[in-house]
Image (cartoon, rainbow, N blue to C red; front, side):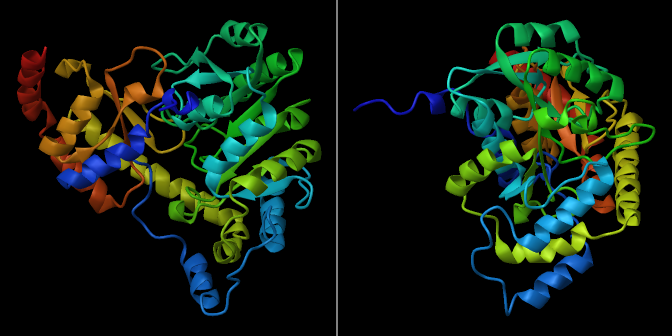
Amino acid sequence: MRPLSTRTAGFTDSVIRRMTRISNKYGAINLSQGFPDFDPPKEITDRLAEIAPRGPHQYAITWGAQNFREALAKKQSHFTGLDIDPDKNIVVTCGSTEAMMASMMTVVNPGDKVAIFSPFYENYTADTILSGAEPIYIPLVPPTFSFDANLIEEAFKQGAKALVLCNPSNPCGKVFSREELQTIADIIIRYDGYVITDEVYEHIVYAPHKHVYISTLPGMWERTISCSSLSKTYSITGWRLGYVIAPERIIERVKKVHDFLTVGAAAPLMEAATVGLCFPDSYYEGLQAHYTHMKHLFCDGLRQFGLEFTDPEGAYYVMLDVSKYGVKDDLHFCEWLAEHVGVGAVPGSCFFKEDVHHLIRFHFAKRDETLQAALDRLSSLDNKARTYQCTEVNRV
């Protein structure tokens, strides 16, 4: 038979979502795939209950319901200081996953190159390859996950057309400073490039760090395609509501791609979520306080066990160093961890272009009782890992 697409042979299935299936198989506490186990704000679910009997149940406008876009434009204008037009600057998508894919297909042509920081959220490589482009990886160096600006410049000298920027970063929790973003912006402008941002954790940042939108820097509005979603901010990951914000000339292209990818986001869910987009600043302050509490609970527990990990500046992930257990195959270790310790994690190697196998990723967007139960199980890790080390020796 004739071979299938070579593009789809260039990457695997999602290791993150695979680890959810493995966690479920062993009854492990799932700290792998990053979804909360607490409910959305009551105002949003109450609104959903109100509209369930009467709708809207049919297609909304392809690029998003008018009231949703107006509320989103008002919210993002407030937080960015930009004048965002709901009709000219926004496309509502089926989650930020579609937002990133539509943005990538809008910007690049087959044969183009795209710069991606490593570690990276695994979708970025797939988006690039499926768009016919070639990724160029730029390392963020642990433990501070700093970058060498010369390597960004070198990527654009090699022909990169765009850079993907996840800020705050999944998986490492880095929050890019204004100075770092200005360095990136200077290079983008110098080489006439674009930035595609993933800012789904924009409201989950830990003091003293601050989220800065690169689109607000001088000369960057016209070069930035900002992608985000409501998933993490309102604890509605299953609703799949995302969006792209960009200048009109770019948005007109995104609209066309989006129209043939998914037609449109779910009309009743947009109607219900519009309530959340109108929340006052106090909601986001409370959200930050809640995540700060969860971070302290989980990270303090890890410290108590003498485990080494990255302390996130934003988002809700920690990268745990498992090198002391002699880990050579981090996927195998995560499978063992789910089965024998009862906690699900993601192997760090799926986030790195570099040969990294000593890190695994946990997330802590869980209720206190869930995190405490996970910590109770992880308290036995050192003892149980002796068995794992023997297994590894025998495997080698």
